Length: 321
Image 1 (cartoon, rainbow, N blue to C red):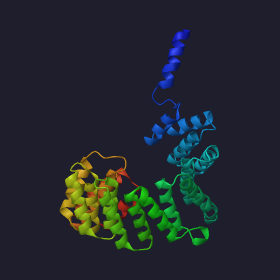
Image 2: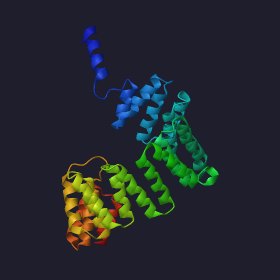
Image 3: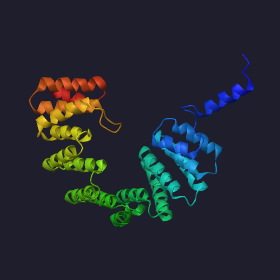
Image 4: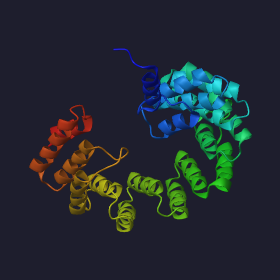
C-alpha cells in the first residue's frame, strides 16, 4: 500500500520522538546517563559521530562506555574529549576515570605505564578547575597507593584533603578518613568519618559508611546506636534494617532484633543499590544459626541458593550447618 507523503512525514516525526529513540542532543544523552539507561551508549555514540568537535559529546561517550564496562574504549573517547576541549576540566576528569577503571584490568607492566597518565589527567582537571572535588578525591587515592617514584606520597594526599575541605567540608573529612585508614590509624579514621556525618546530618551515604566502618572495627554498640538513630529518624528506610541484620550475623549480638529487621527487609520494596534478597536470606540464616535454630538457618541458606545457585558464601555456610 502506498503511503501518502503527508502521512509518511508524520510517521517519521513520531518515530523521531518515540520512546527509546536515539537522543538528538547532549542534554538528552546526559539524562540517559543519569538514569543509567542502557540506550545511553548507542545515543552517545551517535552524538559523538554527529558532533566530532564537541568535547561534551566525547565526555558523554566516555561516561556511557564506562557505564557499559568498556574501559579501554572509554580511554579512547576520553582522549578525544581532551583533544576537543583542552581547557575542559570535565574532559580530563573522565579521562582519568577511564584510566582508573582500565588499570585494574591490565598486568603490572601496563599498570606502571598507565599510572602516570591517570595522575596527569586528574592533576590537569584540578589545574583547570580547583573546585573539582571528584578529581581531588581521585588524587588522594592515587597519592596514597602509588610509590614515590610515580609521584605518590601521603603528604600530597593530605594537601588534597585540605583543599577538598575548602569546597566540601564533609568530603574533606572523608579524605582524612581515607588517609588514616591507609596508615592503619583506625580510631582517627572513625573520628574523621563521624565528623563527616555530623557535618551533613541526614545524609544516608555518610550514615551507611560510618555504620560499615563501625562494623569493620567491631564497635558493635556504636553501630547499633547509629542504626537505631537512623531507623528512628527514617522509619521507612530499608538500609538500616539490613545493617541491623548484618551486624547481628557478624557479632552474634542483637539476634532477635536482627532477625526481625531482616524479615521486614525481605518484605519491603528496595532500591537498585540495596542488597538483593539472597543476601538478606543468607544473613538471616547466619543469625538463626547463631541463635541455635539450625533447621531454620538451613531453610534460609537454601532460599538464598535458590535465587543464586552460585552464591559461594551461602554454599559454605549451608555445608557447615
